Length: 117
Length: 108
Image 1 (cartoon, rainbow over the protein chains, first blue to last red):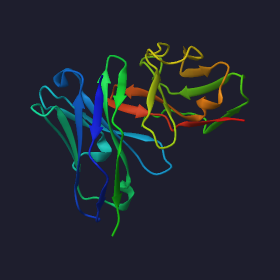
Image 2: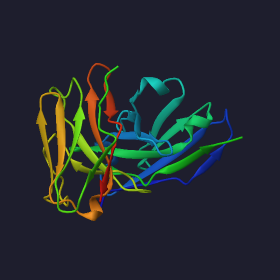
Image 3: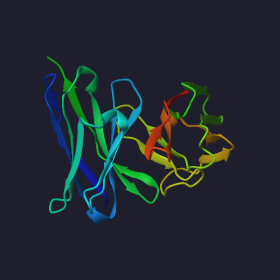
């Protein structure tokens, strides 16, 4: 079955960077875009962007341009999201999601990133 | 910038019908998707392309669209349906994905 398994929780200091991984299985990795969505505590869902696993091409939400980098490793069927210059308001659960025929048809379990001095 | 607007909360009694709306100027031109999210869990797709239902989603969930408003309807609400619901669409001008602010469904 399709699975997206994310890396574990992270605690970072302001100004640092964090890299979250999303390991996929159960389908052809290069066949579907991977999106990243975050959710601050008690808040709604916020789309961050996507990576095309075939070409490596990306599309980032304007809010994150210049701070986010989405990459992939096709040999590992894994996508990555790196966010730099972290601030306290970047504290959130970060999700990866597969863009299937019905859009986000499968999600990772989420990775809590806490930014605190 | 383009936004999707949802009511913050909807409350219904068990067995009643819950309707959750999502409004946006571009909705007549873009498909809408609905996600259910329970506390501590990842979102789950319940409706796609306005009215389609993924396999495994109960029959009581349905979607409809009229003009700039789309509606998620849950007929015969059950206690297990208590959750946050988010609509999602696209902003073709910026090639961005948009989420509504979310609606908390409370089953009284």
